[in-house]
Length: 230
Image 1 (cartoon, rainbow, N blue to C red):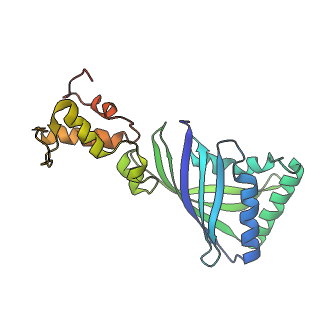
Image 2 (cartoon, rainbow, N blue to C red):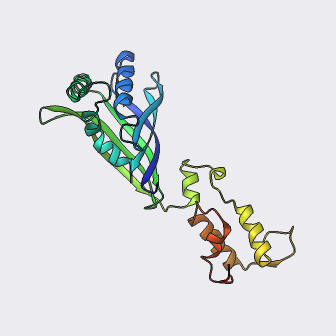
Image 3 (cartoon, rainbow, N blue to C red):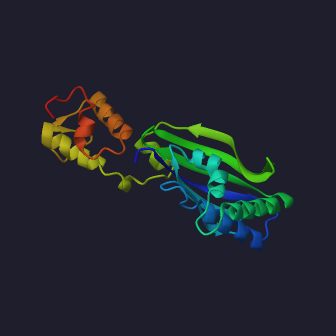
């Protein structure tokens, strides 16, 4: 589905966390927020108490930031194995204890969503806060950096490996040769017409900008110097 973003990141638990409350927080957090809104979820895993770190991942509606902004509402709407009132009470007690111990969580993650071509790194914090007679876990963004949505950046940010994409550069080169008899400048294994440096640059740019192209034609159709009959 095009509107589902995918995020991965790390948590750094700030303050004097004890092992018991560290485990309790993660267990309660996952109980309410792991897959509680259909396709959308937030999950903490691979926790390391010694380093006060954990891994976080999830899928958001258009962005993972939406999940973090709505997480208290998700908790309040939780009625799977208990009443709404019980869910709110358990969450309030957890956050009161977190507040009493002056604890907080710093969060760093990368998020991508292909429909809007969203690719962003975000740093923020989760802190307990009393609001309207209830405790909430407040999400605040400290820093964000947006990137062009392309194959190189998706790989550089470790959201994907090159093997995750359906179309490889070698397949593209083979199709270019088979259909048009054209080869890259450094290709000495085929007998064909070498692309100009400008043409090769255009192909590489289009390939990079269409990371989820399934067939070479999707790239070729973007190139004005190739025949329009493909």
